[in-house]
Length: 70
Figure (tube, rainbow, N blue to C red):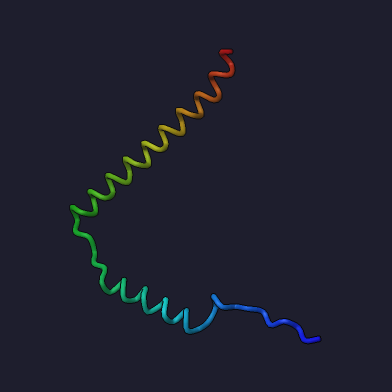
């Protein structure tokens, strides 16, 4: 009775090299953002994180304060 060979289709060297070539191609197309573009993206990302944090803190307060009132 022969043991079944394990299938490692996702780990073939050809697939890895193809993926690596795709990533290198994308990195070559990418450019560094200009200073004003970087700051605009940073402000938007910071505002989004602050908004999500406020929503989470509001939910936390509602779940901890409201049960004590009732």
